Length: 297
Image (cartoon, rainbow, N blue to C red; front, side, top):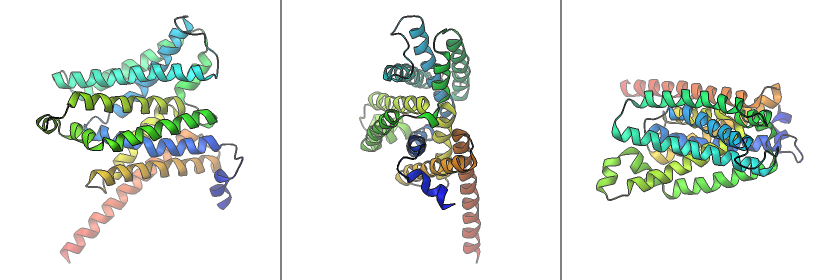
């Protein structure tokens, strides 16, 4: 058992980049997911990764049509192209949904459901419409965390580091416009500016995550850890920190399970973080029963 626990920390470990990439996504994505919960738009955690994937497919479709540079498999310009397409689609979708929310057109769930279905459909159509690089596109759309390169990992860590600083530096403003927009307006805050800055942070975060680990694992780390953490937290800072810790633990344990049992890494991560959610549910119920008995005794 100790061999499997210590193996990822050994110099020259073959899956070194995948190990740290899994943990990094696990630690960071829940910080974004907390804002989805505050805005009561948890379904965005499902829709935005798929929208991001559609942006990647569209960018490579334009490349295949000769609108942008020719596809060079595995080169950094491919990652940049994918990131740009993903960011434009993701941020555009968030802004569009927020405008519709402000105008009160339809329900939140129906809007997000419709855009998710559309994003799923156009992702497939964009891939089908590109005769060049289909294998590379599908690989990037699905996210191959096991094949993460050293340069990808460095880019991911730098991006997450910058975004984490922004999230905590402007935490008060982001929370105010997310939790109580009317109070923010009364207090003289530029709600539109802080909304756009938060959307930009979310757009970059999801774009990076989808490119590296794929939409499904991104969704799992966005939503499941905050769901688990909210049972134990009444204040926001502990909520952020516990969500991040649960996600990071899920990434670490998921990798160990995948490595020891020879399972695919992304499904193993999702299974483990879901098991942690169930464990948190049991613990919270047990704690509630214990407190009730203490009060009655």
